[in-house]
Amino acid sequence: MSKDDLAKLEGKITEARGGGNYTITLENGVTVSARLCGKMQRFKIRVILGDRVTVGVSPYDPTHGLILHRYKV
Image (cartoon, rainbow, N blue to C red; front, side, top):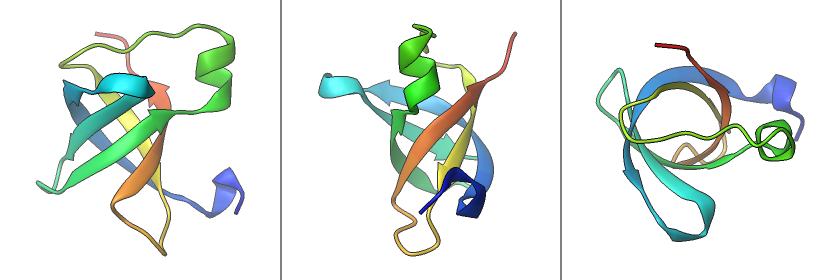
C-alpha cells in the first residue's frame, strides 16, 4: 500500500516507546501506535512528547500508522 492510499490525520505525541514506536492521540480522541516514515528517519528528524504530527493510517488497520510530518511550533 502506498502512502497516497493512507488517511492523513493530525494528532499529538503522548508517549515515546522503545524501538522507534510512538503513541499518538488524534484530534478525535483515538489512540494510535505509529512509527517514523523512511524520509524522517533518513534526514534524522526527531519528534518528542507534545509535538503535533500528521499520521498516515491504513483503512484496513486503523490502530497503526506512519508519522508523515512534524509541525513547527
